[in-house]
Length: 380
Image (cartoon, rainbow, N blue to C red; front, side):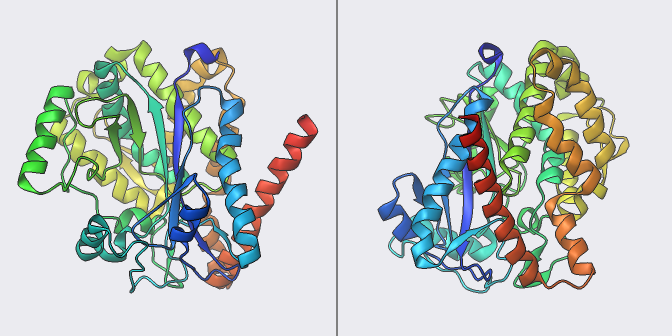
């Protein structure tokens, strides 16, 4: 099975703080002591990156090992890791610099403020053939909203519900505001160079959109697709389920480019597809699984839940062939029980405070890591 699968890696952003839910910024100290972690402009969150792997058997451990290391370092300082994707209990009015002398960080703070102070998960899949890469980018761009719907975990900000399921995606400054559905690599290179020349993008990394190409020398040398839209998925089984769905979708595309590339089969123009995708992303950020979306094939309305179920049905024959059916099971639970944001908002509607919800979720996140460790010991 592994010979047919793609390389997969993750960029994981995390918030740190006290078990009470109060954010405490220590990113700079973490970086000095733990080599696996890098800082973000605001010191209240940090990031680690997993090495690319093919086999799903090893991906979970590559996700959990840095978290366990971080927890061990945080424990004597009476600090922990948060499962949320926004400053759930505040303070979003103040930017807390991780490196006061970093000019890029100064630009981020002055331009965007705490809108960028979020935690997310970026899923990278290796695709070296440029034609196939841009075909995959087009399809994933048109379906990215479905992955946000399954991962939404940021309904709170500064101790209050915002009215959204993914406050993170609503507040994060997508840059540039309009990103085309690229026809090919050369168009992408020309477009990026134009954005850099005009100053809209500060550097080649300054492309903050739902999905983008990535590689060792952007925009010229590319070797992977990066899905950036997902909120933080603290539950590794659900993260791997979304990764499996994404990979199966892309592998299915490679087998039927003439049936799944939006430019080949959609009744809409490339500009219409880009606008439709952006609108779908916003609709899902607001009410996730309950959103009414517009399908890229014909622009017709479809509920988010129905579209996800339709997508699972489409990839299922390939999932059976690749022995990946069980990988998708956590997605069915989300469809039946709701995503994390929906569960939190339901608890809040029943009278539970935001601080209590976050505190309980911190304990759940830690318990899931412990259970995963115990399971590995038993299997070992």
